[in-house]
Length: 575
Image (cartoon, rainbow, N blue to C red; front, side):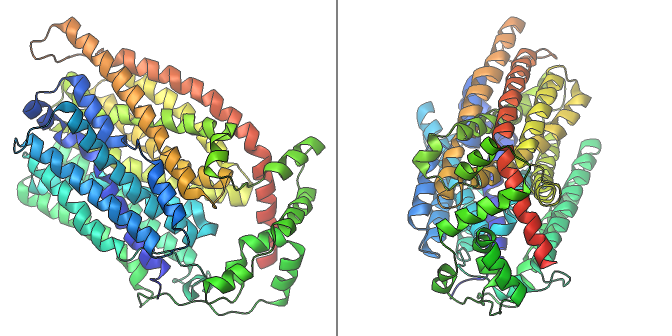
């Protein structure tokens, strides 16, 4: 028996909470620097490894794809490996920081990379499984998953303030326990359901419909974001007693637990297949538009098993004929139509994606976007300190950044999906907008004072969320679902490389140069110019990437026009 898609969905949100622990680095970074006597550049390297050390990111994708026919074992095995890697990595770092074991710096980097790779395994299991379970709502699903990953650091900051402050290393031990407990329990509910469930064919006007359930989730996330931002602002203005922090943390956990309502409303854990009959209009639609019939076969066909589902899918030749019919409604030149027929909604293998120009244009945009965001997060504690802020103030900034990170992921997933369905706006257009905004924010941060750092933290958090939401959705749309796990995992290397080059190579080096000029005995830098040159370089790089993202938009515009025409025909039929 399969576990219901909605129980898998809520379990996946818990996995994303575990994955989001990587954003808590600034909470304990100062303690690591002191206890291990690290330089700023070494601390940057450690932070980069913990935040984005997906150097072997392609492995979970290949494992998932190789087990794609094992609908239960595949997701659970990938989840279990991720849980063990993340917990083991954080535990080893805690043991080293508390001097229970002694490790060299390169060994510490290796263990940090293991913890970070655990995040990639968890993210692969959560994203790929839910996109396969809800293929027609991939933007909404990815936004939902990524929003919970984004809010994780804010929730964990509340827990730190309530139970661990100022003992940051004790909090690090807590981080080692969360994946193996919460993540381990969630792994039991992970599976891909290869057919349409009864819960998915409920009329959209009812509360328990698919659309209403996703809407309820987004409402809960929105309330959680507002709650976290309000509590963060309260903490920044007033020194709250321990009891107040404890109650605020309980409120955060209660809102996190509220997502269970979505799955509990089904009333059962097991999956029940839909048994419905196609109407005459739907049968005519399947004949006239085989491509969309293929995309929606599982939604409109009575199927109770995977074999039934596969049997309903039309042939690839029929799908190609449908593409040609769809082009009649699209305003394109003959050459553009020929190009679209050759490339529209392709299904590329791992190797074919690597040989595709669009893949590397997307890879570069994600690498720079996330790399600049990680540079900001890694240096947040030092930026607050250099601008004259309290060392404890970084927790407030991190909480706000995390809340906006969640907001960016959720809004980007929802808005891009609606804009594509209603107006035909390509999702790549939002990638151009995000990279252009990033260039402006990096320039602002270069000249930021302590108050302006609040604005930068909010903007960086939002944009980081947008990049992480766009990455899997664009990967699935531009390179297909057949090898989505492998392609998505190799795309995870982009944030890793971007963070390594930008955070360590640019931001950390700029700080070190200014610290040397200030001749501080502890090697610290104080003043608004400590990170200025680094963020100006990042602004220039983001500007260049905006140009390459515009090229990607131009190369894929015709494909999205075809997709919009298909969606319009489908909506006209079912209304």
